[in-house]
Image (cartoon, rainbow over all chains, first blue to last red; front, side, top):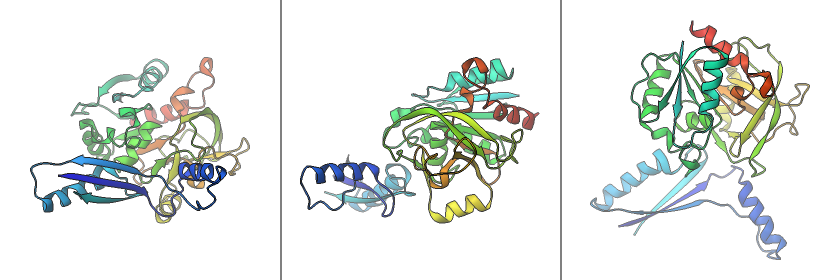
Length: 79
Length: 229
């Protein structure tokens, strides 16, 4: 099983990196770019647990380590 | 009084802390490898600056799961004095021993320079020999010092006088220009509610002797020593 974890900054939390990249795209002429936020993408190989357990354990992994829920949201997809 | 200085892979201010404690303040000091599982006999634990685990994932995120951190939590719960400096502050927030989080500087740059801070609360073990509103010139050296917490947490910190240092100008005015990294309310250092876990982005251990540029950090250590005698 492969899990994909997306960690993104919560709404309202300033993302200076995203802002800088957004500004760069605009200055390159991509005027349609109106906002950009940068997050993390994590791929996890998983073996030996049911999908249901994997769901639960991945959520735990996100809460405990992969995301800092003070400022970050996360989303998990299992393939 | 014995200070314990925790060493993670990637810590790099551990020697500065050791030098300050042992040679300037004439106290016992020992390094504690992060795999240790006992803090018996220590009066104060220092979590030093550096780049524990290369700052992988987030600053402090991996270090906070090192075996010794469980002991640090228990030590703090029993009232032991814990001071986290720079990366140490980041580790304490990740561990949940202090609220909030230290995010990437607003400028996205690593900032290494002297700044001014104002003492907001001198009724703590760490700051009791300073005057309230005293302004200090003190070094910072970090890429992730932008203190952030939700509004309720900030309000709680402010209401309980848990903000200990604020970035200010040389006259003690709290201004946007004096804020090097984007921290909410110019926060540079906080303490937990019970007053024994202290996290600071500025480095007091780097200004403990005039030959190295100043003595503005000395009183932090003097406070700790007198609190634990």
